[in-house]
Length: 104
Ligand SMILES: [Zn+2]
Ligand SMILES: [Zn+2]
Image 1 (spheres, rainbow, N blue to C red):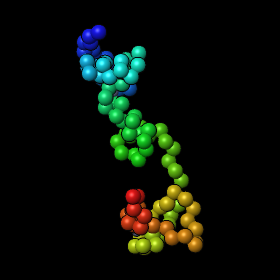
Image 2 (cartoon, rainbow, N blue to C red):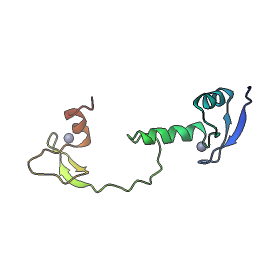
Image 3 (tube, protein in one colour):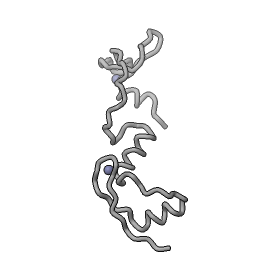
Image 4 (cartoon, rainbow, N blue to C red):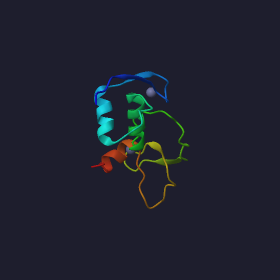
């Protein structure tokens, strides 16, 4: 079975994008029967959103978290934290938090 490039319209941004031969082969190899509904950039945006960590996106449907004013235990800067600060636990500004607790 051979494929031809198709022009599809993105259901998210309305842009016309190409459903390339490679992608069609990929879709078929995965057993997908539907054509993609979104252009690659919208797919990327959704993917990165699903895996969290902000980044690109900007959909803004998430309700803002309540922030509590706090003073950084490291540098003394005024900051805000997404939880009620407790007397017995140090609170760090985002810069110091990264220093104090490296993510890896
Ligand atoms: Zn799009
Ligand atoms: Zn700090």
